[in-house]
Length: 211
View (spheres, rainbow, N blue to C red):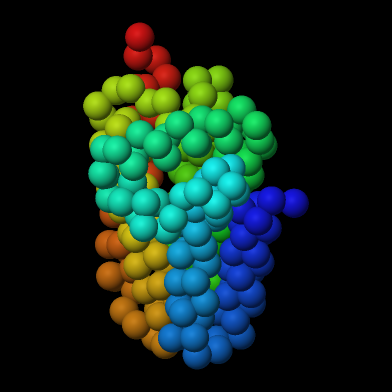
């Protein structure tokens, strides 16, 4: 098994463990810390895949510069990603599967705990199911051409932004359940997150049907 795939599996298990701690109402800060590690691993597995494909020729500095947007490093990383997609076609899908497992699990637990209403999860499932199917026929996000898709979906800002909003939202919902924080701010953050996810979905659909 590739180290990147092992990291993906590990971060999913970390989230499952954090969910167990949420239900038991263990220390909220500890749970958020574990969740933070799981979210950080989402970036690390990408680096591990690229490092493995380049046989260790890509340093963490070069990878971070590419993420920030350095044209030279970004072009090189993009070429390696395309190589990975051809050599290990299941790899990118494994990463997406990990993302979905983490996100769905967190939505489900807060609905189960009566923190959020069920319709939120139904919106997310509908969005991911149909958009993933459309993009599965189109190809990976690395090949996106439209301006909207590049900005809100495939860019470093787009990818990093949604992960930050997810982490902040789910962390606050943990504080709501475990520590009794006001739910109103949780609803506001949830609304922002769902809106962001839907916007990214619109960008993907626009990309898929553009010429």
